Image 1 (cartoon, rainbow, N blue to C red):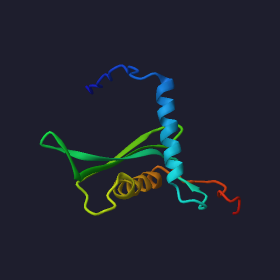
Image 2: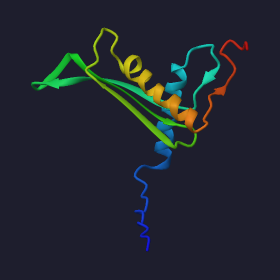
Image 3: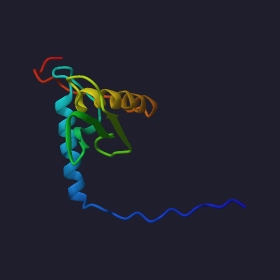
Length: 128
């Protein structure tokens, strides 16, 4: 006899319009991060973050945590990727400079494994 577990019934936590708005914001933020003129667009919506760490009732301006969260594909999300780098070193330590490259390596692997190829779009200047 094989037991089949019952899955809990899904319950909507957020209104559909609210999640669509946030997903659109994330898609727009990721489009802006694409290299201008390349014509390549990964089907990813994401957002970077940089936060100071709490220390003795305040915040330490020299100690940060960086992150990048994304879902893909943009239109019908099936995957979520979260990269967090705790206390990165260097002057240029932000979510977009530290965590995003880590996340994109994972995203590239997911795209290759799931056959989600980047879409080719017209470059900003109109040339091909």
